[in-house]
Structure formats: structure tokens, C-alpha cells
Length: 137
Length: 68
Image 1 (cartoon, rainbow over the protein chains, first blue to last red):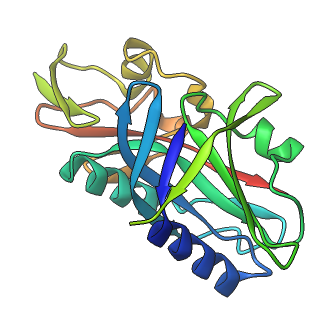
Image 2: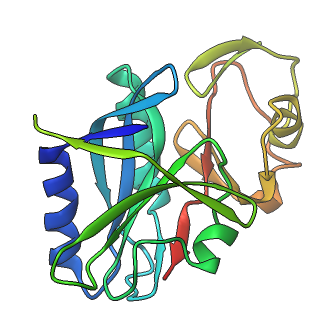
């Protein structure tokens, strides 16, 4: 299970809507408790591709985020990105570029009126949906 | 000499290269990992030549990207 606070979800959603039709992206960090990942902080990063169908996290911002996580006693839990006009599921490219099998890959779809956020474990060409719980702060 | 790898201090041999450190640290898919030394990015093509020095701080960053 992966847990996300409502306010952090709203932060991701607001940024993704603001960036659309360009894909938005970032990192999530927090704690691991047993089999659960608890997100304590969401990072908004620049999509250096500035593209509607691709994203690449800015490596310099990624480095700053990793240092911030360490300074705050948090561990990297994964990343998130938006699909402005496609479903909340990993594309073939998402799977091909998912090099860290320990990470959670969160995808926010804005294609319908109601946004959809899912989280996935990706290993090779297999993607498995993780149980995602959005909690009130 | 002492270097810091991903926030953890380690004793390593003098003259250690980034390429050897990547092997020693068992980095997965190293071709998709970016390395920084003291916040300076090291190109993958320079891993063999990049020699670490006492007090250096090294980070491994996985490439993160995709597309819909």
C-alpha cells in the first residue's frame, strides 16, 4: 500500500493542470513501514522535455530533492507524472524507462473530467497497480 | 581515503575511479545512472577517467522519464 495526504494530492493535481498540455512530473519521498510506503513530501520538478508526450526529470533538481530528502530523514519512494490526454496507466515508454524496480511510479490522468491517480510497481515490461490510499491530512 | 556515497561515509582505495565505484556499489543499470561528484555532473563517457579524491561526495541519480 502507498499512502498520500489529500493536500499533497491536491498539490500534484494543481501543478499538473497548470502545466497541461505539457506533462508534469516530480518525486515522492517519505517512510517505509513494513509493506507500506507513506508519502511525507511531494516534489514538483521541471520536465526538461517540456513536451506533451514525454517527460524527463531535471537532474539538477533531482539532486537537490535527494539532498532535501536526506536532510529531512525521508527516503525516496518513487516519482509521479501526468498524462494530460491519456489514461492513468504506464505506457510502453514508461515501462521501458522504469529503471528502478524499488520505486513507485504514480501516474495522474487528466483525460476525463474527474482526474485519476494510480500508482504502479514496474519491473521489466510488467506493471502492477499498487493499492493507493489518499488520506485526509 | 574517505568519500561519501549517497550520504554514507566509506573508506576506499586511493585512485578509485567512478567506473570502479559503480561496480563496487552494484549500481543497477549503470548506463542510466547519472553521477555527481561534489554536485558536479560526470558524463557517463568520463566514468573511467574520473578519479575520486579524499573528501569527495558522490551521488547516483537514476534517469527518470517516460511518455504517454
